[in-house]
Length: 291
Image 1: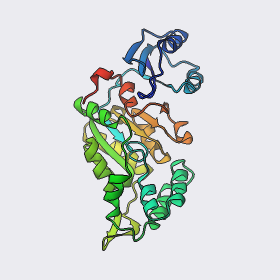
Image 2: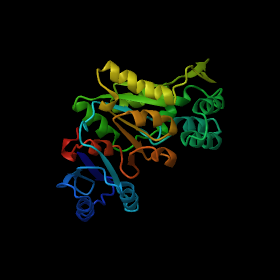
Image 3: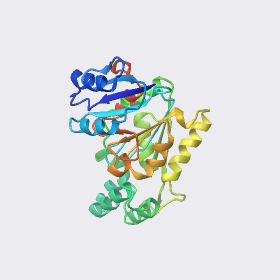
Image 4: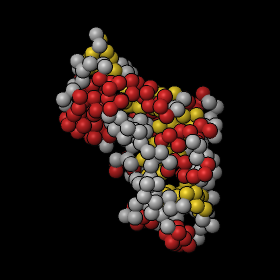
């Protein structure tokens, strides 16, 4: 059996009964269940519809996301998440670069790297080199003044952990940021790259080895093995090309507001919802969200 989920942004609840029932009838689905009126609904299916992506494309213009996934093992026991443009709205390296006066140039490299146009490791080293001599004290100020959480993250972490799940923040960014975000949101652990500092200033180098695409996949495999789980027990979320291996190996890999080239390679795509979409995709109702 499969489950079809329709959802939208909780701030603009545009999902109506007519839309849900029209799709359910067209696909011969079972009774619809409303997870959150106006925001998310689901219904069971016996198979994946042949016109799934045609229906998905039609709903995009209505600002509605659609996903079809197996009904078995939907509630996951591990959340493994990217940080930049996923758990937070910003790219940390772009914010540091702006402080160093090279923001526009670095942001261009970041966009190309996240779209898979550049080698991640080489692009990271090039960008970090441009941060040389930036005072290390800039980092906590950037976290305080420039970094904002992606909506829905607090509910996602609280709800999954309240239901016994483990949460890992695995980023191609920097430990100085992941440590703070992990503590704020309640992640159990965090992994990222380390900016090297000497005499209170960034050296323009990052510690080896670089945490990139392979390291994110390795983290998924290592953490599930340590917890006596399998990758199928995990839900992963990210937006960039360096997240793809992790997203495609997890039991549920969610491309959240992802670059088009990334979303095209993922079956679970959330373009309009916030991070609570990951709860609706697991079958949680709004009433089951933890405070």
